[in-house]
Length: 240
Image 1 (cartoon, rainbow, N blue to C red):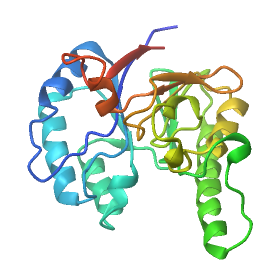
Image 2 (cartoon, rainbow, N blue to C red):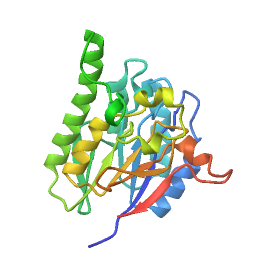
Image 3 (cartoon, rainbow, N blue to C red):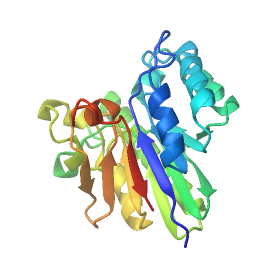
Image 4 (cartoon, rainbow, N blue to C red):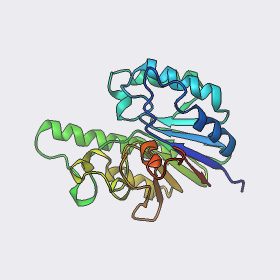
């Protein structure tokens, strides 16, 4: 079985004047990896104009397949669909509840949502707004489950923005844990026995963790990766 090298990053936060900021990293990724995974917060204020800046750098430097999910920043200005269209036209495969296969490896992804973890997870009880919040988290988990069900590959990778476990958000203020991810995303991962999960969002979190059944989960937020050292690349490479 051929090995596949996966480069993953998140929270690149491209603004209107960000052209070139990841060009060097993207060029390096093209040299060392077979696939690039972008785990959300592709733009800073959720503007299609910002996505165009990212797409310019991707076209110039990246010559491998690119898969992506949106993050919370990408929804800020109500242009999430436009951002997805910009990326799609540039050849990026958007995994918004969708699945795809590359060289025998299946990929599924959604943005995900908040709600918290374990026994402290928010439940649909009380005010209608609380129920709507919880339903959003459930909807993302269901869409992830549906995407995974489409895959017939032995190896499976999940791309998220929000974390499915508490472990990779440790380091953030505990008060904001409920807004960094949800355990509802974990159940499909365990049931479909995926091989690996990558996510972003938690800039001050922890790099690595695992689900309750031992599935590796990696926080690939670029701001977090840069904190490892001054010269650390803002991406990680995994071999599957």
